[in-house]
Structure formats: C-alpha cells, structure tokens
Image 1 (cartoon, protein in one colour):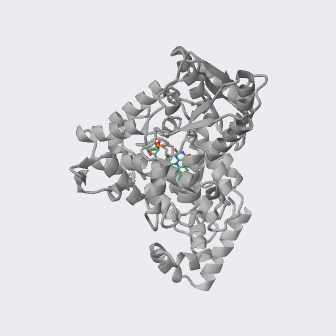
Image 2 (cartoon, protein in one colour):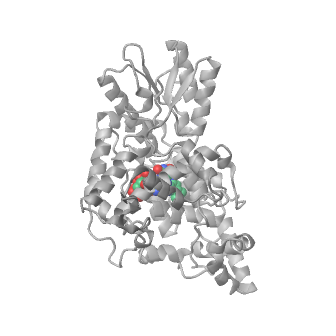
Image 3 (cartoon, rainbow, N blue to C red):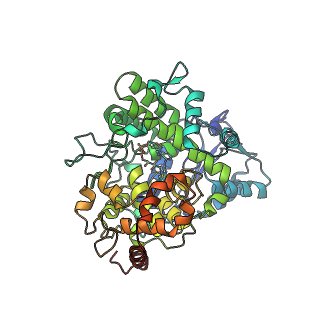
Length: 509
Ligand code: FAD
C-alpha cells in the first residue's frame, strides 16, 4: 500500500480492509520532491517530519511499514525509482493507494506499476467534499465557471451553514463585510498561533535538511509547525477558540512584521491530510451556532475551504496537464532574483518575502496582492512564478498552488479562476496597511512616474496600457480603463519608460 508525503491519514481509503497479516505500507523520502523546484528548508522539513511521525504511529498500531529515508545509502532519489526497487525487493501481488493529489506523481507511479505488470488500484480521496467527477459535471452544466455558484451548490449539498434550505443569516456571502483594514494603531491585541517545538524526530529532520539542502531558500530557526494529527487538532481547536472570531473582519488586512494575524495557519496540516476539511468546517460552523463567532467570520472561513479549496482542486484535475502551460498575457520576464532573498528596497515585498523565508508562510493577501501582484504587473513568465510558490510555502502542493498562482494570481488561464485580473496600484497596499507598509518605504504609492514612484503604481498603469485592447472586452475593467483614457500621450510614454527601466533593473529595484 503506497502512502505519499501528503497522504498522512490513517483513515484514508487506501487503508480500508488493510490486513496486517499480509499487507504492508510503503513510504519513501526522495530528493526529487525537494529538487524539481528548490523546495524551501521549512517546506521539506515539514513534509519529512510529518512523514516520520506518521510512519511511527502506523508501526505503533501494528502495521508493517517499508520506509526509505532520504539519507539511506541506496536511495534512488525519485518516487518512481524507489517504488521500482521496492517492487523488486518485496514482490507485492498488488498496489493500492489513495488517488494522489499531484498529476506528475500519479503518472510516474502508474508508469512503474505498468512496467512491472502490476495493477495500481486508486481509491477515492474521501478527504474532499466534492469528487473530481462531480466538479466536472458542475463545470459542464455552465457556460462560465464561477466560485460563487460552485460554493452555493456545495453549501446546499452538504448542508453547511443552512437553515431550512436557506443560507444562515439570509445571505450566501459576507465578503463585503470582510475587507477591513486596521486603523493607524495597527492590529488589536490578539492570540498568537500555538508553536509546536521540535521533538527528537523533528530535530533530526531539521539537521538533515540543513545539511542536505543548505543552498535551498528559507530558514529553520523558528520551525514550529504541527507535524502530527494530535498537534494539528490542537492548532485547529486553538484557532477556532482564539482567532476565528476576527477572521472575517481582518481577512484582507496587511501589517508589517505581523505574519499570522487572524489567519488559521491550517493549510499545511490540511494539505498533508493531518486534518480533514470536514472536521475543520464543522468546527467553524459549531462555533458560530454556539454564538462564539460572528456569522461573517464563520462564513468567510468556510468559503475558503468548502469553496475555494475544492474549486481549485476541480480546476486542477479537470484541466491538467495543459493548465500548467497557459500564459494568457504572453508574459516572459524572468522572476526577479530578490524573490529568493527578500533583498529589495520595496518595503511590502521585503516584508512578505522575508516572513516567507523565515516561516514558509504568508497569508492570502500577501500572496495575491503583494508577491503575486508584482509578478503579474512586471509580466513574469507564469511558470517561473509557479515554481517560486511551489518551492517556498509549507502548504505548497501542486493541485492547490498551481490554480492559485497561474489562475487566480497571474490570470494566465484566460479568466477561468477569476473573472478579471487582480490588478491594483501601490495605493491598494497602502490602504490595506493603513499606510504603514509604505511609511518605511522609499517609494510613494501615489506617484506613477519619477524616481520615487512606487513600482507597483508605475507597473499597474503600464499593465493597463499594454493590455488596453484586451481589457476593454471585460466589463469589470471599465472603471480603470476610464481613468486610463484621461492620460495623454506624453504621460503614457513616461509610464512606459519607467516600466521598461523597472524590467531592465535600472530603476533602483
Ligand atoms: P486561512 O486564511 O486561515 O484560510 C483558511 C483555509 O482556507 C486555508 O488553510 C486553506 O486551506 C483554505 N484556503 C484559503 N484560500 C484558499 C485558496 N485560494 N485556495 C485554496 N484553499 C484556500 N494554498 C495552499 O494550501 N497551498 C498553496 O500552495 C497555495 N498557494 C497559493 C499561491 C497564491 C499565488 C495564492 C494567491 C494563494 C495560494 N494559496 C495556497 C491559497 C491561500 O493563500 C492559502 O491557503 C492560505 O494563505 C494559507 O494560510 P492559512 O491556512 O492561514 O489560511
């Protein structure tokens, strides 16, 4: 029975009917999963630590586990190589696994099984609310795919936040209430997420990763992610009790030096399957029904999991492998080197990238409206942006990372994930951080040309200029294009010149 590093659930379908007398579990740590993109140290460490704890728990429960460690002498370095060697050694009669999340991995394992003449039985991943087949049927029934319709269908089908067939509170969506910035004094006092200090197993992994992936991005000094189911459950319970109430209101807010805010930090535990989304959604709904959290917080949080998370998985599995090749804006710039170091004079980018390298984490608005926005406006090749997001975040697995990066953030899929590109000038970042992120920056968000013009602002106007004809076909872009129409030819030329200097690296960034 095959268990991958993001399938750490002892209740998964692959374990159904497991007979300890004759069945065995196969797990493998391999270099390839850390080198196909330069996986950050926190990301690799989290996967390996969680895998080792899971294998130990399986063994303690009396299950035989064949486990290859990264530094085992004869490690073949790839999942396919390790599986092939294990088949040779163990001569199994059949292979069983829960359907993998990643297209590349599925193809690689299927190829090994086929070459060895073995059947590879794929069992459904019960972790998700919606099967890929159900998503495909949903998509087929519509001319355009939109999160909101999918989400409502999910709410109805699973009876989440519903009262007598109607959405709780009479509305499906509390987005409009969930866009507050902090005031000038910054975030009010709030609980920090729990830290899980590394035990002996995790410390061994941290040493291994430091040695073996010394040149990879990110640091391990403050590693404190949950690596077992018990720890993940504790993190969930603490989040619901201490911070879910503020999730809705502060969902989009930014503040320098504040990585966690009212976000849950549960994505990695969910993606590794240490937590089941059904239990996470149920806990949030229960907190609302018990009167502990406002409806807009519970709804906003549940929409991310029951809505977005399931939606991106559906997009990934119904569109791959072609999806990864899309590049609707014909963008070909290289990713700036500072994405890997955080070394940039732009304060908002330095803040978001700095904490990313420190913790392997940034919250959604930092990913979408800071790092993602800059890459989109600069015109970076989507595959390079994809490689960066897949490498740096502890929660990065391709089925969720790719549609978010290529679709939602870079709008490279021609509008499948989002009905308009998420473009904004530096003013957005200024507003969502009550000016604080810009206060320490040498660039001014209100200026679009000149040496102190905020690069986001220059590149925003440049994006509108470069794509004016295409954007004009999108009614949701009418307002920005109306503002663009007021710019005369000389101003347009100056914007283009400064944008070119930013791309050439001659504008001081
Ligand atoms: P919270 O803000 O507390 O949200 C609660 C949960 O909702 C998250 O744990 C997550 O499971 C889910 N969720 C929220 N937004 C999304 C979304 N857009 N898509 C899918 N699930 C969502 N998420 C990943 O899990 N892995 C990734 O590799 C990843 N890459 C991203 C890349 C880009 C460019 C963008 C814009 C978003 C990406 N996201 C990714 C989605 C989202 O940003 C993260 O899930 C979230 O920031 C994780 O932090 P959290 O657990 O504190 O989330």
